[in-house]
Amino acid sequence: MGADLLMAGNSQRRGRSEGAGKKRATAGTGGKNRRSLAGRGATPPAEARPGHPAQRRAAAEQRQRADRARARARAEEQPELLLGRNPVVEALRAKIPATALYVVTGDTHRTTDERIAEALGLAADRGLPLLEVGKAEFDRMSQGALHQGIGLQVPPYDYAHPDDLIDLARDSGRPAIIVALDGVTDPRNLGAVVRSAAAFDAHGVVVPQRRAVGMTASAWRTSAGAAARIPVARAVNLARTLGSYQDAGLMTVGLAGDGDVDLHEFDGFADPVALVVGAEGTGLSRLVRERCDVVVRIPIDRDTESLNVSVAAGIALYQTALLRSAPRPGSGSP
Image (tube, rainbow, N blue to C red; front, side, top):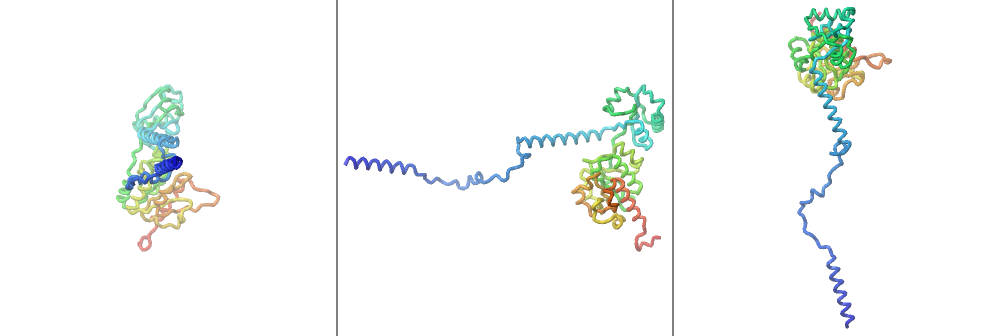
């Protein structure tokens, strides 16, 4: 009997321990924790994760780009110092706006070099101040660049607003022709385009504010004085500016080697047009090209890869002038 009680006690203890070990059902949360159970989505790229080395590098590069942009903006707001005997003489001959002529004191070439003598004479005729500085001071002003003892101070260019060119075209009584340069970085190309635009009666030239050259002294000089006769505007966003030109009734015509139609087969230049020329090497950017109503090409020999930017713009401007000078069908003009 004792054995039976012992066995019964063991079975009771075993039953109680088995019952105590069972996991009972818990009360529900009513969906309150559903958000915590949901997935967090795709893992963001390393550049977007705070604290990640790639994110720190990307932030540092962005700060450097911003610093460079601010430095360029400050430089553009400051007068430019054009250095060297030939550049200074050429600039004075082209009547580039200037505020002063710097000459190093004690320079032995001042009385013997014909270029310096001519620069002094041209500056005197224009009433420009002649400022004499020591060589050490001029070395500092020119930041160590070769100056040959002479420099011309050129004020910042006074850019027009892109809308001003539309107003100018309306007042002229002629169909608008505006040249837009998409990322041209060589000031000589910009100056040559400005010269061609003035020669063929364009109403102005538009350049982007960023990643493109502005009207530097070199561009002024290359324009051979044409920059004084035709306005150059600066656009914060060139694609958006082209859109506003379209709204004003202008056809945007891009120029590219892989264009849709040959230049001589396109007759739209007789109407108001914004001629868009791409950058050296890269051509039209994607966003700007998408803004063009049509892209034309200049047929050239297959052995020639491409034309210089300023040459291509000059050819298109000549074609525009040719179409506009021809009598229109039914006009009765001779």
